[in-house]
Length: 439
Ligand code: UDX
Image (cartoon, rainbow, N blue to C red; front, side, top):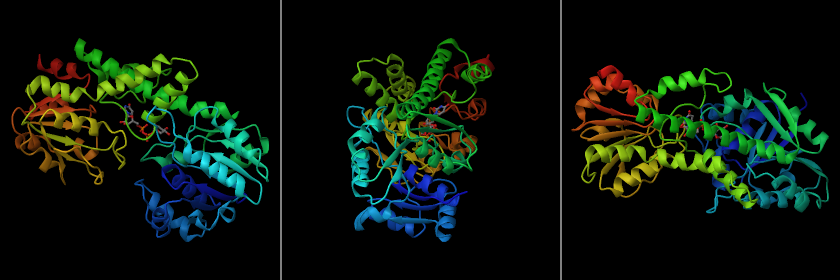
């Protein structure tokens, strides 16, 4: 393998994983970020993100001298290698569009200041058409030739390192064959199918993949709501549907919907992009609407059962958008807690990792699950952390106050065991599971 001189701009989630993994493959990597505090933290071996294995790999690659961190305060030119990854944020603007300010600024700056030719690899998620626009606006005028490659990422939080080395595909979009060769060589060690396309197609693959997965989730959630109405059991329905190899078993877990840094942002951006170009993407609109509705289910169910929620004590278990991450972006927990508080309930919330989150006024974060659920009239399980799935629910039921409702927002708990413990169990599409055993 030939060692490449690589620069990764943006030491956030995607940039950091990219930098660490490429350094681990033997390349010479510099990660650049304008946030001096973050660079200092990384230089001293700490990770600003929680990701299993990242601290160990950071230590290994930094010690070998293959990974360095820098801010651009002394100028960009000396920091730029032969391959420059852009992994800066593209947050959601008010309109639903992806905000491309940081991407444009970085591309414009590096194109204007470089003192040598290089290949620019776009890892940030940008709408179809962006690459072509960046090339004609900034790269064509650069004093040195710059090849452009769109290389979307498909990493899952909590499994990002594993996903880097074992991914289903590496997508590379460019009209420059030598730039494509240079980037493909970086993925030599990665076990994946490499797909070469034009730039706009690569950009579209990213949005289409995330929107399809989000559609699968919203679809199974609608089926779960039908199961509730029909007295069917979503667990069995999901298995039965997923056994069809054309559908597949993944992403068929019903619950209170998707959150995180990718799905909500990318699905809304796809809706925005389509509308802007005069196309009304009905399916994607429905996916967004269903996802918003799913997170209202726990509060609706508690209102139906408890009547007035004012004065009720509710425990919320889990604040992150999924287990094994400290990320609370777009987590259903925040909306659910806000609704509970607005209806007058007092909320104690607990999460094993998300200690930094600011909760709506009227809700407090506590340091363990038992403090949250002792004396609670109801528990809402938002995140299926193994700590909650493995909780002693018989003891929990004894510690709760009447009417001891548990709303399992992730269909992760054993309905029969909880009911045997004296809990009134509610979930999403699982109505048939206890009904079947009761009668
Ligand atoms: C996702 C994509 O999987 C990844 O390829 C992309 O690059 C970034 O977005 P991530 O946000 O880390 O990754 O989370 P993921 O594990 O995909 O879950 C997303 C959300 O969907 C979570 O809130 C999860 O709880 C929810 N989900 C997932 C379901 O509700 N049901 C399912 O069956 C699967």
